[in-house]
Image (tube, rainbow, N blue to C red; front, side, top):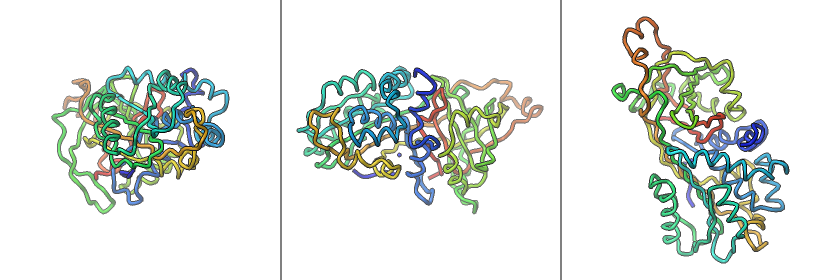
Length: 384
């Protein structure tokens, strides 16, 4: 498979999202591994979906495989006992929401029988399923997977599976789609082609640049030499964090810093202050398929790809390898949302109460956050 270069207590929620180590942000670590060294591609990943997939695998794992996953997911035995219920509570929020759509599924090669208790667990707690697939018929297998993805995402994602290998043992697929309206929308009449600077030599590309005037939380982040703004969505307590380095070549410093950031603490810091802002950012879409296998191995997860013990998932105790973990993300960032206050958008207000002007007119990091400020989607936009 080729790669395209993508609860009951506060304590438990934190464990669900803090993966690689106690001090390292899983999503930002995964994102930084996916970003090419030249920072010349737009990249996106869903840490939430990846973590959910790993948790599903963990519920079917034993031996060394379970130990490695526990370490990577930072799970203790006490947390493991309530892990399915906590994922159910979190996933149920988005299953009901119309704008954030997700789907995860495990496909196992024919000849390996899937434990019925494991199937029941996936359906009841993870809004997911597992089934056998004849991977020797690659085109037919891809067609079946794509039909499932389309049906579970309202046809927003249609071509997740391509170039399947006939020797696939186990394939884990996930799809994420998000296109939500803002709490305060961008004025579509203000969207104009404008310069997006791609480097410190003032080279630029033209992009559709949106503009909004309203009250937002903004903070100057000295450690990253960047500015950050939080843009709330209308539904489900979701928001978008945008971090723009003050230098076009400063994205690496931002990503390196974000790897060690606890997102809730970062957002709640006093550095973020609510103020009247005129904010400009590109209007863009991302439709990306990424194989997470190599990046997860780079983050010290190897056993599931090299003869995993999945004795609780399968009726056979013979080791089986996860061949690929494929994720497809469809994200659209546009103007739609509730209109800003007429007072805030009037020329009179602008003259008498000037806005703080902040622009994402160079490479930036972004994250779609849930109500607890945990990343559902993370990405970088470089104008490519």
